[in-house]
Length: 178
Image (cartoon, rainbow, N blue to C red; front, top):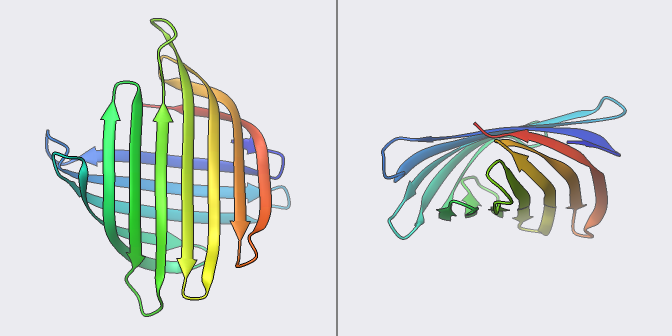
């Protein structure tokens, strides 16, 4: 995503360990670079066990430029159909100081024709610590999908600290699904 305040790159992959997708590993590496060349990097690996009902447990290992290395444990829900997908994860930080978060992605991709689909995505992340709200982000993508290439309009909205200090990044996105 190229936006008015920074460039955002996001590399994600999902590796199932069995044909039923009971055990899987989701990996995500995100980087933002603002127009003053300040960069922020996050990388996480999510080991998931998902029951037939779509509910299960997750262990998360993560590295962040702002908070270092950490681990979380939690519960998730995963549901997917040909034209929509929902993943939601509630976690607690495995460290001395209390930290809990909510992460979710909802995608809706209804067909327009044999080669074209609508592409819509909403991603939410909220982090709370003992003293209250630490950070939240909402990422919205609205566009089209042509044979696995997605492109369109993007908006990222962030709120920081207990006073929810806002920031926005508007622009366009390009995405490729493999």
